[in-house]
Image (cartoon, rainbow, N blue to C red):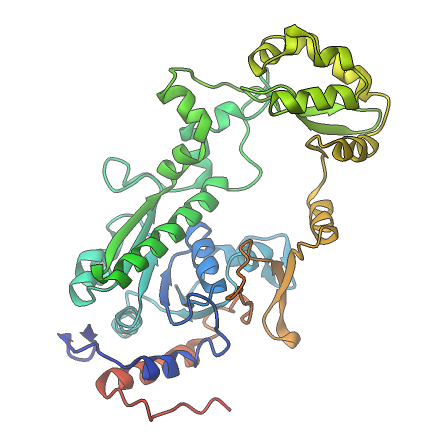
Length: 424
């Protein structure tokens, strides 16, 4: 590890008890499966912060290191909750914030102290940009061989290193937009920055795998993800259609390349998503629509048959669906066992999750200063996610982070487990 006062190597050995005592200064209520893991989060915008929020929900102590101007998403509004952008609030709970100017020697020394005590370092700077601050992988791994260092970029570190890593660019370049929209209309972006989210998930997976490798005695390593590779992986059957079948997917509106019906269909009131993903579901759908003759018609016997004749089959189904509203068909078809859904807005989606007992909204932080957020989607029988910290205000935890550093440095120099911290 680094002694930031002298720049020399020091013994990083501490007792678990002393380290836990120091960490309780930042996450006193942490009990999740990642409790005790320290994450130095130098990322911003979406992919990195989403990744580190997931880790923080599971108990990791995440120190969000921001520039004096703060994470860009703090200003991405409207919409806002008071003066705080809801974009920022969505992906930054359970973290502590400290603002550091890496061009300032004292702040850079503080950054190095934080990393010297970290298990995980995550960043999404332009490839190579952190080398001038001594925060590149080669430098940090030399002094902290156990460090799991995660780099997120837009297009990797080779020929694409100079390309800016914006999700919208990746949606365009990966092919997603070419497949999104009506066949006779313009291409569309997805309604969210979908590849930022996918890359955040891939990054969390990579970090957890690297931590497991380290726990097994393998040491730290460099985990690298990029939006373009995550996009091509996330396009699953569509990229497979090309690389395995030589087929280039095109825009089909809301239709599915390989299945019919698998799209919105008009009813007497509103559109309804109707799915027949296999032969059995198609037979059940025909019976529920009182079209038993279709169920035994050899022209529609297989998915390939239904795909090839979708234009003649669609008006038959639409005529029958026109006899009830989407809400009525939702009840009828769901009871029959057919996957279907009316098209709702976000408010209705949250309300449905509540009715289904999914408890989608959780409050992060103390009762007097909490923020409603969306629940972590993972459930554990023994170590559930916790939501003890609201999304931090810029530099709002400086004193706590510096106090933790002081205690952590002291524990490293003289790991005395009897030196307990009074948290009363």
